[in-house]
Length: 222
Image (cartoon, rainbow, N blue to C red; front, side, top):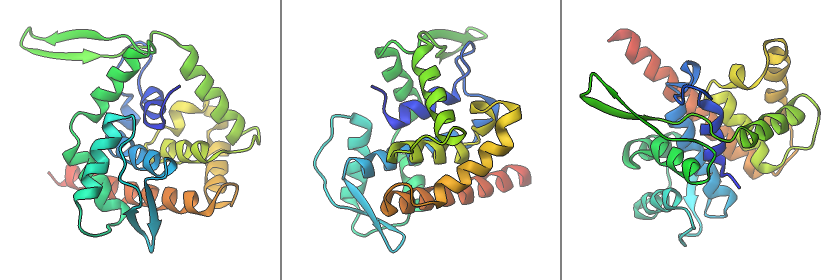
């Protein structure tokens, strides 16, 4: 069984090249940070109140990445908003993308290929080994967004992260993208799942938009 963050990464990786698709290259690191926060919420470790994320249960999970995020939250003396925590996770939890990719290698979903640039710089690529998990994710998301299937809390979280990470064009065919974007907006606003999930998804998505806008401006100016 794949975690929310593993699913997001899997959708963002090019099947053959094993690298992140261009459209998601800037947003994905923060999208993965958001996925970890949402996993903690779904696991009952955090909640949101007055737009601030607060720790409600500091007990360890079975996931090393989530436990590192829990440590950050535990060490903080006050509640902070989603934007703050996305930046903290992105900056202080090292190698999120690579570690998630390695988890998918261990689950035999991805293969690991070691490469080098000019025989000096070594790096890894993670092409798809087993296509079925990603196909199942894509099929289910399309059923929810376009087919009207009921959305679970995790479905809503993943769909929102797909949008925030600029992966809508990667997941949906060109002919369906306009309709998909409209339906995603509707799904994230309608009370199809608990209000708390809708709220935390909304806060994280809004924070991602602000962070990515600032990153784009900084890149353009520099």
